[in-house]
Amino acid sequence: MHAAAALLIDFGSTYTKLRAIDLDRRIVLASGQGPSTVTTDISVGMRVALEDLRRRLGRLPRFRYRLGSSSAAGGLRMVTVGLVRELTAEAARRAALGAGAKLVGTYAYRLTAADMASIQGLGPDILLLAGGTDGGNSEVILHNARMLGSGTLDCPIVYAGNRAAWDAAKDLLAGKMAVCAENVMPEFNVLNIEPARAAIREIFLERIVHAKGIDRARDECDAVLMPTPAAVMDGARLLADGHGSASGLGDLVVVDPGGATTDVHSVASGQPRVPGVVQRGLPEPRVKRTVEGDLGMRHNAAAIGEMAGIPALAADARLPEGTVSRLIGELAQDVDRLPHDAEERALDRALARAALRCAMKRHCGSVETVYTAFGPATAQTGKDLSGVEVVVGTGGVIAHSRAPLELLETVVADPTEPESLRPRDPRFLVDREYLLYACGLLAGAEPEAALELALKYLKPPTEVLADDVAANG
Amino acid sequence: MMPDPERMPATTPRTIVTGVIGSDTHIVGNRILSMALEKAGYKVVALGALTPAPEFVKAAVETNADAILVSSLYGQGELDCRGFRELCIEAGLDAILLYVGGNLIVGKHPWDVVERIFLDMGFDRAAAPGMRVETVLDWLAQDFAARERAPRRQAG
Ligand code: B12
Image 1 (cartoon, each protein chain N blue to C red):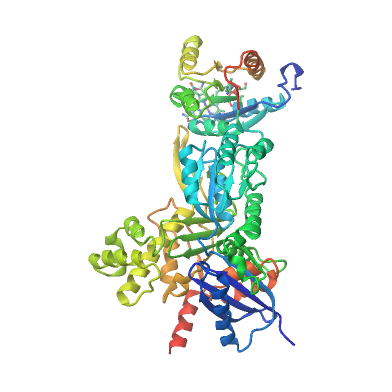
Image 2 (cartoon, protein in one colour):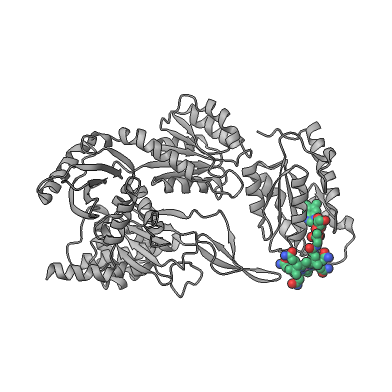
């Protein structure tokens, strides 16, 4: 009798990573890894990874599912266009980020000829076009549809703006691949990003995977379902909400510091927790992803240095400032570099801590006191995550860290910044096996197994450390 | 209050943005006004109390509003409303209908003096304290009808 098994694949930018799962016993059978060969033929790296897996398992099981996610070939590169920056343009941004995209450009108001040239230069995989509430402003979205329709940009376009203008926009976009989704903001200040997200994911599945050559691995992979950040997000949602009678962990935050960006996902309503506090601005999606494009530990090490300040990084790393400056310069030149010695490890730790602290601060909302004639009142913008009880760390930086708690603890609320609504007293879990994306991929087909795996393999940092000591000792 | 067919707007409902400007929390009159507008068949985007001036304008842009009705009760109206028309022009809403009402200025001033201040700021109408909603509906009907006869600027 063969146990039912699943193969979960992450076609990354550097590696092709595999997780083989026993669906009955709900354990990880083994992991395999190969290079990312997306620039030539992605199936080559995939076969190397499978060979690696075979070596560890002795023999490959017959997989019931072989599902993939991808961040290879630059990820899902998207440009968003909206009308008012804080309204439909912001709603469009959130829809794209929620679909797991890498946002390469965001535009508001009327597109100019210069905007069109810059979009062309960015070469997005998908463009999301929003603007106007339903029955509201149509002039600007039609202008933008005309610009896009008469230009040479040839990527698919998701129209998620004023429904009343779609018929006219469709004509202006004739000759382009354009689909219509529900408006990201059908009524003033009402956020409706799920339909646009679904449309983006569908185009990803049906066209982008092929356009990027990721479907060349189809002999070894049944479907590349979504961009990897979307898989992490689906994993986070499952872990928080549970499935059926199996309950999840409740409100949580997932942090993923990486070489180029730092991602933060929250699954929580984020409503004001103190009575009398008024929420301001666009409503917040319960499942929210933010990406800090300037907080990457390799590509943007210099930016982290600028943001946190070299003296602060040096103090945190206990290194001379000169050493920190020199090492940061080297990192930007060598983005695949792994830390070689104690100095480099200390700097990496300080960079990750600074990136996480800042990314979390930007993800969470804040309160400010507005002084009215009647007396002070408190207004909240963004999500109040102060009551979130679980923070999960995922991604290579945290998984490979010797002391992940030292990284994760930086996301906690700082008493000197009471206006920032970061988690006050969360417990931490570490995704040491890099499994959260795999659980997200499996969530559609086998949600119960996926949830049990996530609950089993995400471990408190102290336990991780103990395992480490045991393994080394 | 029954919807009055005389005051009913044209087939596609006109959109009106309402709100109380600045740090003003007096919401009651603004809410009564918003409900009356809705009952009269307008599409109302009610921003509520404590609304900064730019938020009126942003909401009007996205919803392609035909008019903005600004309430100010606490006496800071002159300060809060300064530059409102310019903000609208900046956002491409050159011809949007602007009304202001409530208790616009602290202290006893002849109404025509107060009214002049707000008309000079670019508001199309300013309402004296305690203005009845019926009058506001009449004003809107008149002003929209006048615009239909002589459109100042064609909406896109
Ligand atoms: C209730 C009230 C409060 C309540 C408000 C509760 C709430 N959240 O709504 C509380 C106790 C909180 C309050 C606080 C204050 N208040 Co007070 N308050 C009043 C009071 C008694 C009634 C207001 C009301 O609801 N009226 C009923 C509604 C239906 O009428 P309305 O708002 O005028 O609206 C009608 C018309 O004006 C018109 N309309 C309204 N908006 C618009 C807009 C347009 C475009 C148009 C065309 C028409 C229009 O249509 C409405 C329907 O007919 C008035 C006095 C009064 N009798 O008016 C004082 C009054 C408005 N308050 C006043 C003051 C000074 C204050 C405070 C500064 C007091 C203080 N020092 O703390 C604070 C300010 C707080 C703040 N930051 O906003 C003064 C304002 C002085 C001025 N403008 O010269 C008033 C006039 C009292 C007075 N005579 O001194 N207040």
